[in-house]
Amino acid sequence: MTTTALPAYEDVVARFEPVIGLETHVELGTKTKMFCGCPTDFGGQPNTRICPVCLGLPGALPVANRAAIEATIRIGLALNCTIASWCRFARKNYFYPDMPKNFQISQYDEPLCTDGWLDVEIDGELVRIGIERVHLEEDTGKTLHVGGATGRIHGATESLVDYNRAGIPLVEIVTKPIPGTGAQAPIVARAYVTELRDVIRALGVSDVRMEQGSLRCDVNTSLNRAGEEWGTRTETKNVNSLRSVERAVRAEMLRQASVLDAGGKITQETRHFHEESGDTTSGRSKETATDYRYFPEPDLVPLAPDPAWVEALRAELPELPRLHRKRLQADWGLSDLDMQSVLNAGAVELIEETVAAGAAPEGARKWWLGELARRANETGVELAAVGVTPAHVAELQRLVDEGKLNDKLARTVLEGVIAGEGGPTEIMVARGLEVVSDTGALTAAVDEAIAANPDVAAKIREGKVAAAGVLVGAVMKTTRGQADAKTVRELIIARLS
Image (cartoon, rainbow, N blue to C red; front, side, top):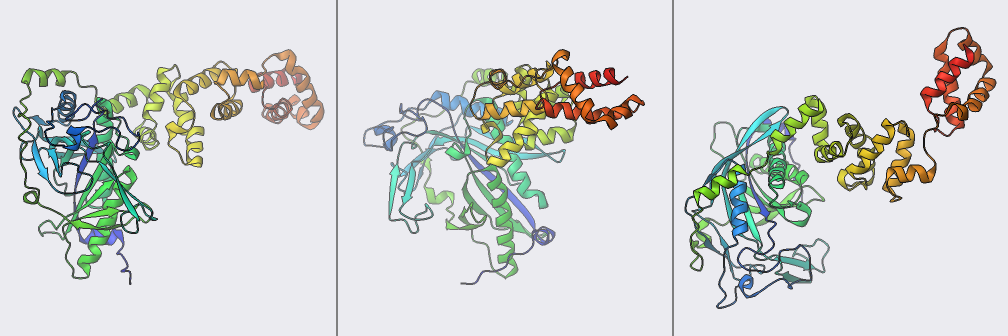
């Protein structure tokens, strides 16, 4: 087997124009499934959260979940969509082991929400992503391939099906084709999914946890040369992290360019993205709508949302994330570059909660983007999972502001918080780390430092007060960093004046 060398990315974007599109699936956080009363909690023993309705047993009839319909309308409104005055569900027919009914109740030519848009910010510039449709359907079950090394069917010794997820309300958000992004196509794809995730989280309709599958993304990619029609697209299925969305677009651009350069043709197909290698492999040929034999779902009545209900939901929409970030940036007095650093670190909510707990924005930002970001990077965890809460950071900064801790001692206290020893004040007291600012307690250490450094003391007596830093350092060493540096300096100058 020979491996074809891929072209350089810069060469690909110089010769080809990418067109991308994204289909994002969001599991709604309703208490029960879309068409039955089974619970939707994540986890649980396989096949324990099922019933005749979500298994499609003979005689079982579905009933639509009002909360799921409401959540879908809210998503559509937040994405500037038109809400249909009348729509209905359809049967999407196909056989796959994780589909207990051999069809999926979805929406086809009459979706609930259509023709919207979402703005994302790339390097300070807004890119408007058109939304084709937002429709409601039910999720499938989950197939587990075991006994192999990859978790995929190839090489597995057996396959198991868990239907707990089958029937959970699922919203599919489909963008219009996105041309004209050039070299930034992978970045635009990631920025869109990031912004969409933030919007849905702000609405409170899903936890959008990609690691648990409640947010999944299919990435469509095609290439064409300038002046030519759009190329044949591929669909990379179930990409499960923001970083992988970007990598999947880039990988497909490189692969497709290599095929086209060799005189080949792109096949319309689904593909799988491999986290470990960063490339994609062929899945199956991509079906068309006629292959699914869509027809109206006979067991469900059409949906006709009351316009007054829709307007009431519109009035209740929260401040959307991009506008919320702009307001926070103004409130915190941050430059565009500083705010971008906060966004890149995933620290917006953490800093906001720390400020709400009583810290000044500058102090909150210092800890989350400094010491805590460093520790998160070292341990390979998300910033929010480092083991410190916004309340801890606010308490720590308050102790610094009150002069009870300096930055060095505060970092030591932080170690104790991460180790689970308690809150900052508790750890400071237990370890005896409070700053010593009592002049009586510091006088002996100051006199000792002066006696040990006569040359430095002589310079200070001659008016060279900058030399006092040497003596301050000596006192800090003697007191294990617990002396108040300002008080020490004042005592040294007073002693040698």
